[in-house]
Image 1: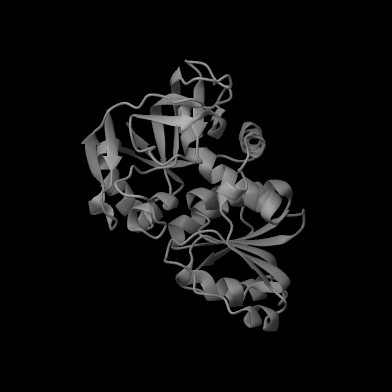
Image 2: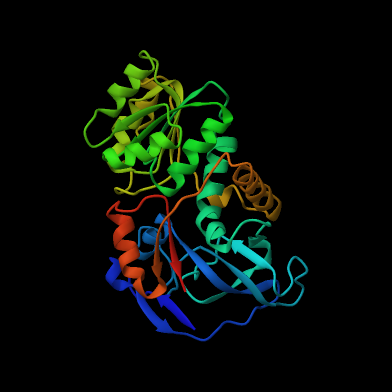
Length: 323
């Protein structure tokens, strides 16, 4: 099979397409023949070394396809089932992958493998952020950074479905127009405007009770300055580089603020949590409350171009590799 491997960390040039043996499913595993592979920022963190992995390594956490074979003890799936996974193991950038059966979920009727691969990791991220990390309530106002991106688009729509008021940021008129079409109530161009000042203006000086920031270094100060008393700063990504350290006393001085750096994998740690999160996502997709945009697709052989596009913020919505 064709598979992407890295032998060192660095830029997109470290991504190599190689011939590799098709894996055999071990006990508790299923062999999945991929139809579509999700491209996510966490993949760039593994590639760059920001999140260390043991080298040499495959890459990619998310893919959808057909179960080709099952290992000993698997009764969750059968050959021929359509499945999607998004919480490992690393190695989704390939034509096949052997994954633990308890880390995959069945694709429901009406959902294509392309949509499943575009939606699961980003959608479950939005689910835990909105429903469990901070249980957003109707009428509350929320700040969503990078709202034209894959997770951002889902956050905006899902927050509106909950009944929240959404302040959304993006870079440039085209992306802001997309976000407005998703239902965002207020728009901020974080390249041109002072985010904190705009949030204070929109909220009549109060600030927001929660801010979701996947950008990192570039938006850190604006996010911190946008929070109301006892507000929660949810830092869940590093698109512009890691956010700086937070001195605890500063949180106190700015209004007894909270700061958290969550990861999806701690919110889908058990199979029951995984199934519940995926079910909630597929429910809002089925209801049309959330639409997942596949903004761009790349052949597996053009994986370097896919990473370049993602890191340059040239993408909109979800990105897929097609084996």
